[in-house]
Image (cartoon, rainbow, N blue to C red):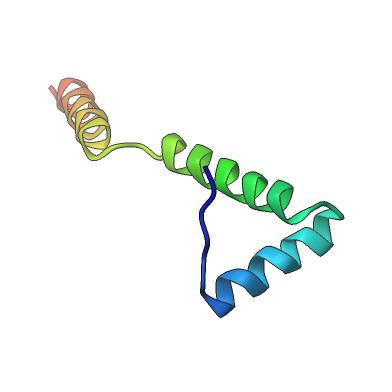
Length: 65
């Protein structure tokens, strides 16, 4: 399924990445999208951060007692 992006900056960035990677436009866009998706997946979610923080507080409380 094709899609079209009519945005000058998006086009310029995609073409710059294409030149830097010495690849085709589709390949450059796929690389950028995959990298972005993986970066988002790697971010800790707020509940995960809260649980880790609670565990650290509990450990500190245990050490202080």
